[in-house]
Image 1 (cartoon, rainbow, N blue to C red):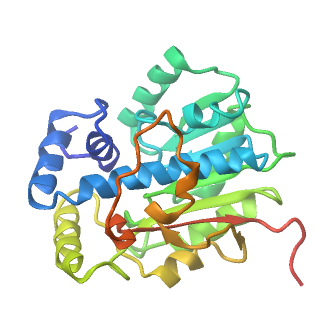
Image 2: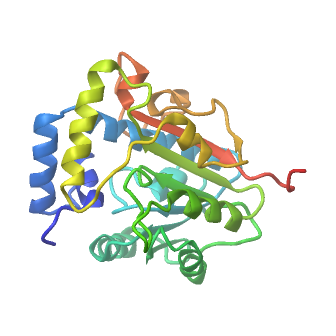
Image 3: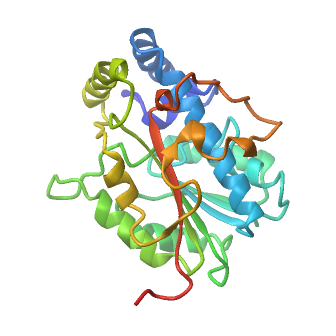
Length: 278
Protein backbone atom coordinates (compact mmCIF):
# COMPACT_ATOMS: atom_id res chain seq x y z
CA UNK A 1 0.00 0.00 0.00
CA UNK A 2 3.03 2.29 0.33
CA UNK A 3 4.28 1.71 -3.22
CA UNK A 4 2.52 1.99 -6.58
CA UNK A 5 1.30 -1.29 -8.06
CA UNK A 6 1.75 -2.01 -11.76
CA UNK A 7 -1.70 -3.67 -11.82
CA UNK A 8 -3.47 -0.72 -10.21
CA UNK A 9 -1.57 1.90 -12.24
CA UNK A 10 -2.56 0.02 -15.39
CA UNK A 11 -6.17 0.11 -14.24
CA UNK A 12 -5.86 3.88 -13.85
CA UNK A 13 -4.39 4.21 -17.36
CA UNK A 14 -7.50 2.44 -18.65
CA UNK A 15 -9.83 4.77 -16.79
CA UNK A 16 -10.75 2.33 -14.03
CA UNK A 17 -11.34 3.04 -10.36
CA UNK A 18 -9.59 -0.01 -8.84
CA UNK A 19 -6.55 2.05 -7.82
CA UNK A 20 -5.22 4.06 -4.91
CA UNK A 21 -3.89 7.60 -4.50
CA UNK A 22 -0.30 6.40 -4.65
CA UNK A 23 -1.02 4.58 -7.94
CA UNK A 24 -2.72 7.63 -9.45
CA UNK A 25 0.17 9.85 -8.38
CA UNK A 26 2.71 7.57 -10.05
CA UNK A 27 0.51 7.17 -13.13
CA UNK A 28 0.13 10.94 -13.49
CA UNK A 29 3.89 11.42 -13.14
CA UNK A 30 4.40 9.00 -16.04
CA UNK A 31 1.57 10.31 -18.23
CA UNK A 32 2.51 13.95 -17.65
CA UNK A 33 5.96 13.24 -19.03
CA UNK A 34 5.10 10.43 -21.46
CA UNK A 35 1.45 10.78 -22.55
CA UNK A 36 1.93 8.05 -25.18
CA UNK A 37 1.72 5.38 -22.47
CA UNK A 38 -2.05 5.72 -22.00
CA UNK A 39 -2.94 4.96 -25.66
CA UNK A 40 -0.37 2.15 -25.58
CA UNK A 41 -2.17 0.65 -22.56
CA UNK A 42 -5.59 1.05 -24.18
CA UNK A 43 -4.39 -0.53 -27.43
CA UNK A 44 -3.07 -3.45 -25.41
CA UNK A 45 -6.43 -3.91 -23.69
CA UNK A 46 -8.18 -3.84 -27.07
CA UNK A 47 -5.81 -6.59 -28.25
CA UNK A 48 -6.92 -8.65 -25.25
CA UNK A 49 -10.55 -8.14 -26.30
CA UNK A 50 -9.90 -9.26 -29.87
CA UNK A 51 -7.77 -12.25 -28.87
CA UNK A 52 -10.44 -13.48 -26.46
CA UNK A 53 -13.22 -13.00 -28.99
CA UNK A 54 -11.30 -14.85 -31.71
CA UNK A 55 -10.38 -17.73 -29.41
CA UNK A 56 -13.96 -18.15 -28.24
CA UNK A 57 -15.00 -18.23 -31.89
CA UNK A 58 -12.41 -21.02 -32.34
CA UNK A 59 -14.06 -23.06 -29.59
CA UNK A 60 -11.90 -22.08 -26.62
CA UNK A 61 -14.15 -21.37 -23.65
CA UNK A 62 -11.62 -21.53 -20.77
CA UNK A 63 -9.07 -18.87 -19.84
CA UNK A 64 -6.35 -18.42 -17.25
CA UNK A 65 -5.52 -14.72 -17.06
CA UNK A 66 -2.11 -14.48 -15.35
CA UNK A 67 -1.09 -11.11 -13.99
CA UNK A 68 -4.66 -9.99 -14.48
CA UNK A 69 -4.64 -7.19 -11.94
CA UNK A 70 -8.23 -6.22 -11.21
CA UNK A 71 -10.86 -7.49 -13.70
CA UNK A 72 -12.35 -4.13 -14.64
CA UNK A 73 -12.56 -2.05 -17.82
CA UNK A 74 -13.45 -4.73 -20.36
CA UNK A 75 -12.26 -7.79 -18.49
CA UNK A 76 -11.71 -11.24 -19.93
CA UNK A 77 -14.91 -12.91 -18.75
CA UNK A 78 -17.22 -10.10 -19.88
CA UNK A 79 -15.69 -10.14 -23.38
CA UNK A 80 -15.85 -13.95 -23.62
CA UNK A 81 -19.47 -13.98 -22.49
CA UNK A 82 -20.47 -11.76 -25.40
CA UNK A 83 -20.05 -14.86 -27.57
CA UNK A 84 -20.19 -17.81 -25.17
CA UNK A 85 -22.28 -17.29 -21.99
CA UNK A 86 -20.82 -20.47 -20.46
CA UNK A 87 -17.16 -19.38 -20.79
CA UNK A 88 -14.89 -19.83 -17.77
CA UNK A 89 -12.09 -17.63 -16.44
CA UNK A 90 -9.58 -17.93 -13.60
CA UNK A 91 -7.84 -14.65 -12.80
CA UNK A 92 -4.36 -14.90 -11.28
CA UNK A 93 -2.33 -12.21 -9.56
CA UNK A 94 0.30 -12.16 -6.82
CA UNK A 95 -0.81 -8.89 -5.26
CA UNK A 96 -3.17 -9.57 -2.33
CA UNK A 97 -5.07 -6.28 -2.71
CA UNK A 98 -5.74 -6.93 -6.42
CA UNK A 99 -6.93 -10.48 -5.71
CA UNK A 100 -9.16 -9.38 -2.83
CA UNK A 101 -10.70 -6.65 -4.98
CA UNK A 102 -11.18 -9.15 -7.81
CA UNK A 103 -13.03 -11.55 -5.52
CA UNK A 104 -15.37 -8.77 -4.38
CA UNK A 105 -16.14 -7.83 -7.99
CA UNK A 106 -16.68 -11.45 -9.02
CA UNK A 107 -18.96 -12.05 -6.03
CA UNK A 108 -21.13 -9.20 -7.26
CA UNK A 109 -21.02 -9.79 -10.99
CA UNK A 110 -19.66 -13.29 -11.58
CA UNK A 111 -20.63 -16.93 -11.32
CA UNK A 112 -18.60 -18.94 -8.74
CA UNK A 113 -18.91 -22.03 -10.94
CA UNK A 114 -17.33 -20.23 -13.90
CA UNK A 115 -15.16 -17.42 -12.46
CA UNK A 116 -12.47 -17.34 -9.80
CA UNK A 117 -9.61 -15.14 -8.60
CA UNK A 118 -6.49 -16.75 -7.16
CA UNK A 119 -3.42 -15.40 -5.41
CA UNK A 120 -0.44 -17.12 -7.05
CA UNK A 121 2.97 -16.24 -8.43
CA UNK A 122 3.72 -16.36 -12.16
CA UNK A 123 7.24 -17.57 -11.31
CA UNK A 124 5.95 -20.81 -9.78
CA UNK A 125 4.01 -22.42 -12.65
CA UNK A 126 3.26 -25.74 -10.98
CA UNK A 127 1.85 -24.20 -7.82
CA UNK A 128 -0.10 -21.62 -9.82
CA UNK A 129 -1.51 -24.36 -12.05
CA UNK A 130 -2.52 -26.43 -9.03
CA UNK A 131 -4.34 -23.48 -7.45
CA UNK A 132 -6.10 -22.67 -10.72
CA UNK A 133 -7.34 -26.27 -11.00
CA UNK A 134 -8.43 -26.34 -7.35
CA UNK A 135 -11.04 -23.69 -8.16
CA UNK A 136 -13.03 -26.35 -10.05
CA UNK A 137 -13.60 -23.87 -12.86
CA UNK A 138 -11.37 -25.54 -15.47
CA UNK A 139 -11.67 -28.80 -17.39
CA UNK A 140 -8.33 -30.33 -18.45
CA UNK A 141 -10.09 -32.40 -21.07
CA UNK A 142 -10.70 -29.23 -23.08
CA UNK A 143 -8.33 -26.58 -24.47
CA UNK A 144 -7.36 -23.66 -22.25
CA UNK A 145 -6.05 -20.25 -23.26
CA UNK A 146 -3.33 -18.87 -20.99
CA UNK A 147 -3.17 -15.08 -21.16
CA UNK A 148 0.13 -13.35 -20.42
CA UNK A 149 -0.94 -9.84 -21.32
CA UNK A 150 1.60 -7.07 -20.64
CA UNK A 151 3.03 -9.00 -17.71
CA UNK A 152 6.31 -10.48 -18.95
CA UNK A 153 7.97 -7.09 -19.41
CA UNK A 154 7.82 -6.77 -15.62
CA UNK A 155 11.01 -8.60 -14.78
CA UNK A 156 10.45 -11.99 -13.17
CA UNK A 157 13.41 -12.52 -10.86
CA UNK A 158 14.23 -15.96 -9.53
CA UNK A 159 15.95 -16.74 -6.20
CA UNK A 160 19.38 -16.11 -7.74
CA UNK A 161 18.36 -12.66 -9.02
CA UNK A 162 18.18 -13.60 -12.71
CA UNK A 163 15.15 -13.22 -14.97
CA UNK A 164 13.29 -16.54 -15.22
CA UNK A 165 10.60 -15.59 -17.75
CA UNK A 166 11.74 -17.98 -20.49
CA UNK A 167 11.85 -21.03 -18.21
CA UNK A 168 8.55 -20.13 -16.61
CA UNK A 169 6.69 -19.65 -19.91
CA UNK A 170 8.17 -22.91 -21.22
CA UNK A 171 6.63 -24.69 -18.24
CA UNK A 172 3.20 -23.18 -18.95
CA UNK A 173 3.48 -24.47 -22.50
CA UNK A 174 4.05 -27.95 -21.07
CA UNK A 175 1.16 -27.74 -18.61
CA UNK A 176 -1.64 -26.77 -20.99
CA UNK A 177 -3.56 -29.55 -22.78
CA UNK A 178 -2.97 -30.13 -26.53
CA UNK A 179 -4.91 -27.69 -28.66
CA UNK A 180 -4.60 -24.98 -26.01
CA UNK A 181 -3.38 -21.45 -26.68
CA UNK A 182 -0.84 -19.03 -25.27
CA UNK A 183 -1.53 -15.32 -25.70
CA UNK A 184 1.34 -12.88 -25.16
CA UNK A 185 1.72 -9.12 -25.42
CA UNK A 186 4.98 -7.40 -24.48
CA UNK A 187 6.16 -3.80 -24.67
CA UNK A 188 9.31 -3.26 -26.73
CA UNK A 189 11.68 -0.70 -28.14
CA UNK A 190 12.36 -2.93 -31.16
CA UNK A 191 10.90 -1.55 -34.38
CA UNK A 192 9.23 1.48 -32.82
CA UNK A 193 9.38 4.93 -34.40
CA UNK A 194 12.73 6.67 -33.78
CA UNK A 195 11.07 9.44 -31.79
CA UNK A 196 9.65 6.84 -29.37
CA UNK A 197 12.98 5.28 -28.41
CA UNK A 198 14.07 7.95 -25.90
CA UNK A 199 10.55 8.13 -24.46
CA UNK A 200 10.42 4.38 -23.89
CA UNK A 201 13.84 4.54 -22.24
CA UNK A 202 12.49 7.24 -19.94
CA UNK A 203 9.43 5.19 -19.07
CA UNK A 204 11.65 2.20 -18.29
CA UNK A 205 13.80 4.32 -16.00
CA UNK A 206 10.73 5.52 -14.07
CA UNK A 207 9.45 1.97 -13.56
CA UNK A 208 12.92 0.73 -12.63
CA UNK A 209 12.93 3.27 -9.78
CA UNK A 210 9.57 1.92 -8.59
CA UNK A 211 8.92 -1.50 -7.07
CA UNK A 212 8.54 -3.10 -10.53
CA UNK A 213 11.62 -2.98 -12.77
CA UNK A 214 10.89 -3.77 -16.41
CA UNK A 215 12.61 -5.18 -19.47
CA UNK A 216 11.97 -4.36 -23.13
CA UNK A 217 12.55 -7.46 -25.25
CA UNK A 218 13.13 -7.49 -29.03
CA UNK A 219 10.51 -9.04 -31.27
CA UNK A 220 12.44 -12.29 -31.85
CA UNK A 221 12.71 -12.91 -28.11
CA UNK A 222 9.01 -12.20 -27.58
CA UNK A 223 8.09 -14.60 -30.37
CA UNK A 224 10.51 -17.11 -28.85
CA UNK A 225 8.38 -17.24 -25.71
CA UNK A 226 5.74 -19.07 -27.78
CA UNK A 227 8.20 -21.92 -28.39
CA UNK A 228 6.92 -24.50 -30.89
CA UNK A 229 3.32 -23.30 -30.66
CA UNK A 230 1.75 -22.60 -34.04
CA UNK A 231 1.27 -18.87 -34.51
CA UNK A 232 -2.26 -17.80 -35.32
CA UNK A 233 -2.54 -15.37 -38.20
CA UNK A 234 -1.28 -12.67 -38.59
CA UNK A 235 1.67 -13.93 -36.53
CA UNK A 236 3.52 -11.47 -34.32
CA UNK A 237 2.00 -8.04 -34.82
CA UNK A 238 1.65 -4.66 -33.19
CA UNK A 239 -1.39 -4.70 -30.91
CA UNK A 240 -3.29 -2.30 -33.16
CA UNK A 241 -2.67 -4.58 -36.16
CA UNK A 242 -3.79 -7.88 -34.63
CA UNK A 243 -7.18 -8.56 -36.26
CA UNK A 244 -8.60 -5.04 -35.85
CA UNK A 245 -11.72 -6.26 -37.69
CA UNK A 246 -12.66 -8.25 -34.57
CA UNK A 247 -13.31 -5.16 -32.45
CA UNK A 248 -16.35 -5.47 -30.23
CA UNK A 249 -18.96 -2.73 -30.62
CA UNK A 250 -19.47 -2.80 -26.85
CA UNK A 251 -15.97 -1.68 -25.92
CA UNK A 252 -13.63 1.23 -26.46
CA UNK A 253 -13.24 2.11 -30.12
CA UNK A 254 -9.89 1.72 -31.88
CA UNK A 255 -7.40 4.50 -31.31
CA UNK A 256 -6.55 5.19 -34.90
CA UNK A 257 -2.75 5.30 -34.63
CA UNK A 258 -1.20 6.92 -37.68
CA UNK A 259 1.53 4.27 -37.52
CA UNK A 260 1.11 0.75 -36.06
CA UNK A 261 4.48 1.12 -34.32
CA UNK A 262 2.93 3.75 -32.06
CA UNK A 263 1.15 0.97 -30.17
CA UNK A 264 4.59 -0.04 -28.82
CA UNK A 265 3.67 -3.63 -27.96
CA UNK A 266 4.25 -6.82 -29.94
CA UNK A 267 1.50 -9.38 -29.59
CA UNK A 268 0.93 -12.94 -30.69
CA UNK A 269 -1.24 -16.01 -30.12
CA UNK A 270 0.14 -19.53 -30.41
CA UNK A 271 -1.61 -22.92 -30.42
CA UNK A 272 -0.15 -26.06 -28.86
CA UNK A 273 0.10 -28.87 -31.40
CA UNK A 274 -2.38 -31.72 -30.94
CA UNK A 275 0.49 -34.21 -31.31
CA UNK A 276 4.18 -33.83 -30.35
CA UNK A 277 6.29 -32.79 -33.31
CA UNK A 278 8.83 -35.17 -34.69
